[in-house]
Length: 357
Image (cartoon, rainbow, N blue to C red):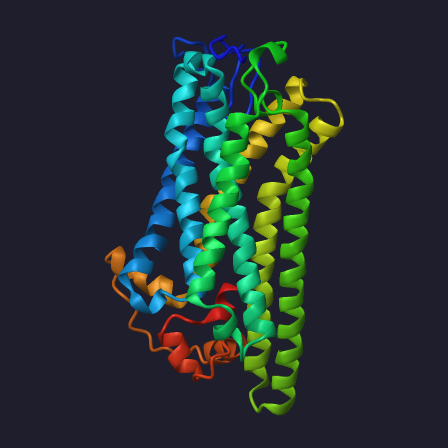
């Protein structure tokens, strides 16, 4: 049986910034105080940005498309990331609560389950964009609301099962941890950690492949439009917009997540789980990964005109009086939306799919 009540050691810093300078009485070093402030700021930014996305989806019926349904649940997952921040911040002031092994495991599973869901919803959105580009005429037959609900349910169940249920059932005991430190790399079995990296690589390669194909097909279609259309500038704008969006999605995703998994891989496969230096680096990489939850609303929502207009209404911002001359949006919609409707109607109904590419 596990000994669940042995107090963990305070010898280093890990995912939430443990430090030898932080004591059980709540005295924080300058370094740890800085981390606390960063996490508090992230909590506010993550929650506010993603709550705006959720509110916009439910306020405006025109936004309730399949693509936006995935964006909604991505926002829910990211909001949960922000909602776990108060618990992690509180640990800085009273680490005695980590004396129970299950509280220690919950410390990590509560955030990894939401981060896992967030990553999987990024993949789901990439799949949705791929279908809309590759099979534009069959998109609304292949990506129905019922199938979207099945995908969302599968994402949540797999995330909860892999990142919450399994760690709660299968973890090391305090007797298995020489320094009794509540660290993710020490609490979880080596086999579990060894699976994290390849699973992440597979997910990343899938997203890279999907967006790579999206860009290639969009480039070919823009070339055909330029060849047979009298408005080559609009075709170039369409191609450039899709390229920029895909670059932002892939760039931010890899920038935020690769450091964490690279460090984790070095620790797991290099036998450096108990290296205090690598634990400290992983703590900073984790904060960077969490920051991705604050960036998603910007990438997937603020670049979409329908969401942007709804945000202005929610924030009581007076809409611009500048006439809408963004004719390139109609071409972008025709590339991404294959339901046969004209481009203007699709845009008015918040279904400008290629904007979410």
